[in-house]
Image (cartoon, rainbow, N blue to C red; front, side):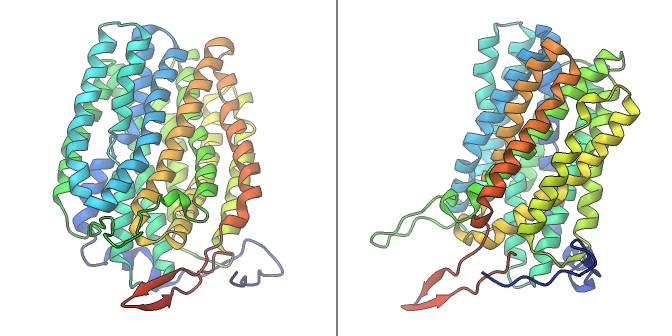
Length: 436
């Protein structure tokens, strides 16, 4: 394992001044970056609207947060199971070949789910309809991260961390906008307006991103060589441990979405839901901006554990709060802890996983968040129906505690090893990457 950079005697969290050569300005000057950044932003916006729009629609048609949470959970679980397969296909056949048909299928699936919900069909029919809606969610975020990896393949390592931070900020910016817009549409226009808008944006944004092929990783079909196999990214060292960590992050997202919706309804101000969740996401975005602008002395493994411990502590008081302003402040604090964990996780994946399976590896983390969110939405919905919104806020705490314990035990896996690469009959060795 590569040696650690000694920490300052006065502090274990001291950071070095930002390296201007690896800042956001240089990142955004990367040749070809804007050809995928703008359409990528448009294409990922619907993902931030999907869960909350589904919860609000199904809650309206069934009268139960438990049922609404369970339907949204089926969508999240379906996405979590299918996203890595979609990432693997994108690695093998190219992003456009996977994304174009996927966006059409997703829009059609969501439209079918809306029609069924408004027809007041039995709950099991909604569960069945939620499966294709989740399975076809466009995995634009991982695809953008793969394009960054291609664009920065000759860049210094700090710029890769800055790219991961930039992507986290972009993701969270969508989660600042998405829930607010979805809540406004569902409460002010029609309960189905959020999902209808989500489907339309997914279709238009997905097509725009897919047709902008500049910077897309070259397809890597299975080698025809004897004995060659296309192994799963989940077999790569460290990916399972990171997936466990991202499951916990998903419980925070899912638990907060349902519990905040229930809390604002209990106090008679349902329109405040989008504002509170947007504040939570704003904390995440703010932390991402700061995180990507400094050069950290500690390695990413230590930073991941520290960020996750802080997130766990931030989730402790949520269930005991009665006032909306205080809940917003606590949500902001929780959001501030999420971005460092997400950014560091994606940075580690870039160091641990070979290029041939990078998109799939990113989708394992995205899928883990979705699965954690699915479990949390279900649990928080059931707890909220029985004991009220405060009970739902225990779900993020339980999820982060369990994931932190498991991540601590698996931290030894978060160390890259040299990988031998055969080139023209000569074995070359990739240099070890210092991760702690």
